[in-house]
Image (tube, rainbow, N blue to C red; front, top):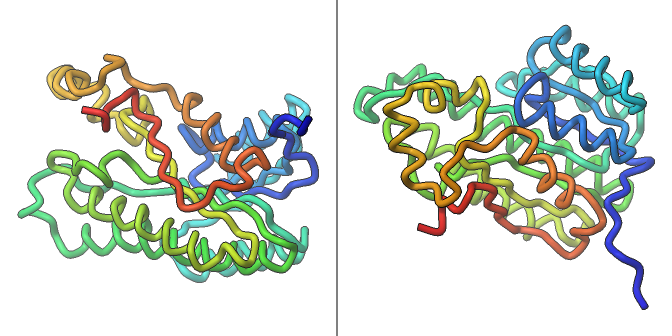
Length: 256
């Protein structure tokens, strides 16, 4: 009889971006609870440290390393620190993203377009290339890209954001194909409408919320913690034969 799937992450080194709040923070907490040394990363060191303090207070292992993934030199600095301090990387959760514009796609200013692409596409891409190289040196690892259901069905007045999230889904599959022989798995997690500061305009505007929930079979908004279990599966050996997958965690939204 084969052993049951293991979700134990003891001895693993993980990076979670955009981890100072919301989905990223809950993923960081859960990975640490399962034994990973979790590097909490976001733009502001103090905000990252607050999450680290929670993790350590609960008995986990974590550290704060600030990084704005829209800035190439900060990505390089982050990975230089991880390589120097740990010499390895086992799990990378690309969760940091931006959505600076809510309005007609026809009114998308070049500066908004560029900022969204720099973070949501270029940032994910170069975090993944650096991460995959470091993983490959130690036999492999798991990259998890937090995309969005908007990458499948574009969100109304969220044009450029939706376009970048569609690119993340395609990027995930490209990395999965090219990195498999190095032992690096790459999968995408697609949250539906989730109660975060990032989605506050949607969640806390009654008219918009009512319209959105009409398309969600479960008829409710997700909590950030409900994304963490899916990330744990993809990060763990339980998903050892899973790569290039797109996992919807959306209350059934994409079923309609």
